[in-house]
Length: 76
Image (cartoon, rainbow, N blue to C red; front, side, top):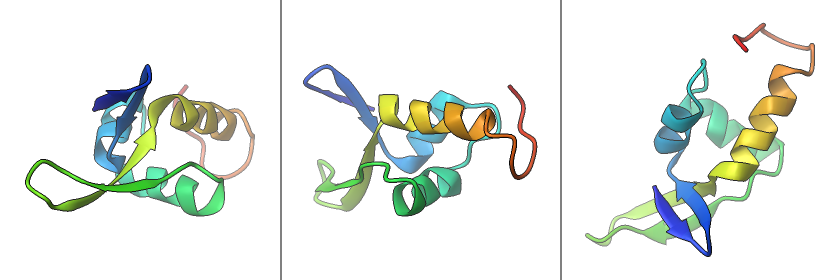
């Protein structure tokens, strides 16, 4: 996780670990494709490409999905 202007950003896997309770890296990537989660392409210190997502926005989408009453039930 990195902090930019007070906002924590992480890769899909890092966001999934932070959110826990059944969230997967695939779910985070799906939120970017379907729900408008901001995805920023960047490079790590070794020059490898990566995509980072803002944790607060991902947490908001996760909470909305969990309380939506549709789809597969998830732990609270």
